[in-house]
Image 1 (cartoon, rainbow, N blue to C red):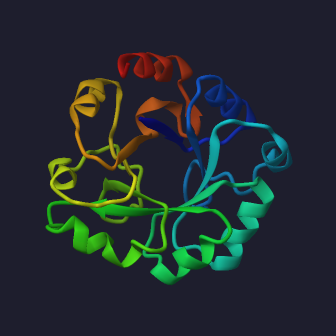
Image 2 (image 1 turned 90 degrees about the vertical axis):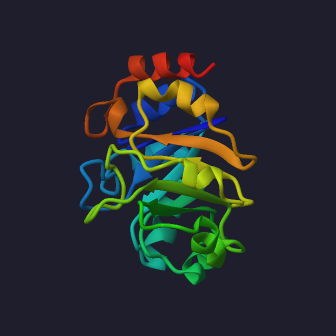
Length: 208
């Protein structure tokens, strides 16, 4: 199972995650986020660093040019799209980086496969997060994973939304042939953008 840690803001924390063999690190490019990295003074060092982990730029309804600029400036391996991005935008970006399309889930979503169908040919991964009014992620809350377990999906996907240290057993028990990894963020922070590496290490050990 792959681990993605989102909301990273410094080169040091990227280096620490790489040392823990984390698979993906999310850099948030939404200016309204307290974890916004777009104005980082370390962008050159981040771009030039040699990591095994994959750098993921997280966007909410970006312009094509803005997303491509971030891919170039930070040497992003993938983009994660958290808004109402069209399949056409995903297709355009797929020539520049891998694409992770996010779908926000609540009790109103009845058919996961119908929701994701328009994106099947233009994305590399899906990510399922908890829907909250006025927020594009970072809710710290879970949705009903049974909705995902019953869907076909047929593309690698991440589970996200309120995952913390107490969820290791539920993650290990979750079964789906396309379950690729988990995405964690706010419940592993000392403050927004500052991850608690000791807590993260404890969690990684509990997943074994």
